[in-house]
Length: 193
Image 1 (cartoon, rainbow, N blue to C red):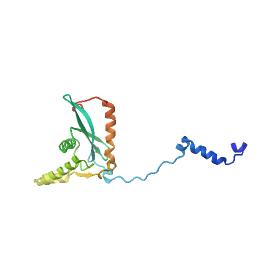
Image 2 (cartoon, helix red, strand yellow):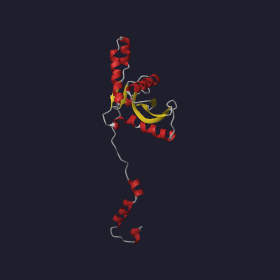
Image 3 (cartoon, rainbow, N blue to C red):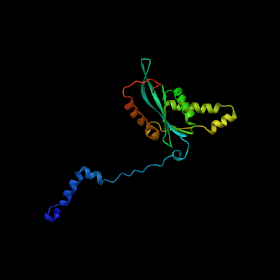
Image 4 (cartoon, helix red, strand yellow):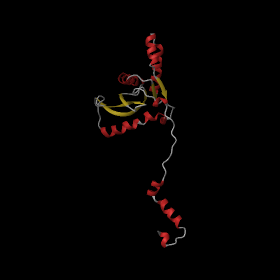
């Protein structure tokens, strides 16, 4: 329309400069970014029962009161790799003993799991060694066959690379944010948590 009435030297370049400075025009003219994503591991694609292939991590600390004293507790987050289901267990410390008790409660409620993904926390590594040790020392052949057929394969992510455990690591934030909003500054007891 401008060309019909006026002749502007380098008018097209002037229009392009104005359009390039307009943020709204930039947002609508950009093409979506294309990122090549890697294939999912076979463990996450197979049709399995819930929590047969799980990832786990600690979240916390969260403060609770115990007889006028403030203590710290942690959540153990168990995540199903296929269905993305979440199971939470509250533990009073991140020690191997407390983790194994939480893991035992998890297995008794959700059934056995064949593969467990986790980071390289000391309690997870020690628990993996303890479970391997107990499966080796069993003497009864029938019981040993049962354990070995339903044995747990523990897979650790690369050390100092939390992004490798993405499907279970990102749920820590999904747990902490609602807890902060719901609890605020309230101090609950361990049983209330």
